[in-house]
Length: 433
Ligand code: PEP
Ligand code: MN
Figure (cartoon, rainbow, N blue to C red):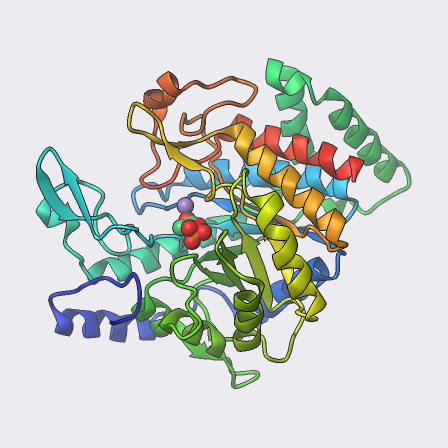
């Protein structure tokens, strides 16, 4: 059997030509930036920083607009300010963007009204539209994804260094949310405390330039081997290979086989990397993965992203965490409260309950506290827009509302308000911890 979750291309020559073209394209990120992120993630694994990683389940080429990117970035920065205040440590901001174009699927095929076609595997592979032509696996798409990633990243770099992301501006957006909505009103106290903290910093003469720019990095699931290989380059400083398609790449629950091609690929690059761990992961699996992927136990190199499900985390995480920790494995531990909590609503929409998301995060904090390890961060699927994909939250979105604005081409995302609420609720959990 070949590597898991790969496209099946019918024109090898076209694939080779695309790969050759990709190999000549400039890097999207620099190796030195990957090292900077690795150093920040080392702080996370030491308990001195908190990671916020978020963005779409699947980006689309059509959706790579300025508005979309700005809204996503804005909500992530708003969340980060709240979390920084509550955790009293730096928050490492990592977008699930500028490259998140390939999806692992549990089924190769999809059937609608008696018609069966290849499943949608993300814009990097085929189109979402349900026609034979659109669902064909087209290698040319890898180049389109490269260009879309480049333009998103360009915008992110401009937004985060050009003053748009100024801390005072971000705080003003949070104040607007808190004072301007019924849902936000519940969080007035925290927002007022942040306000006082900012005024205090201003009063003691903190350098306003310090507020002006933020560090922000990109990440995506390293799924398509052709693409990631083509984007792996030798760093001129160190002569070591880096995957320059993104600062951070992770492998998913379906591609983390110890002897699989994805683990092999990640073992050869120097980037900081992540591995998703679902409820069937044993401690020995995780220890073996750490041995393969981080044999020198370098802090910041490896992040374990647990995605257990709200009903399972309190049973499954403690033995895993305790044994891996006792084995001396150096890793940042991050909670993905999304992927273990997906279900199909009676209307057919894939959805998640906001309460389950919160419950899994609470379980994550409680388990880490009882084991004595640091709950290092959150990995969430979200958007800055007012979509209707997850149910619940302060706006009490119901299953019947899902059709109003369901835009995800893959998994359901928290909308803008649900994302902000999540950050305020997590802030309360952190303050109680
Ligand atoms: C994802 O992050 O979109 C995903 C598919 O996750 P997992 O591998 O954890 O199922
Ligand atoms: Mn997803």
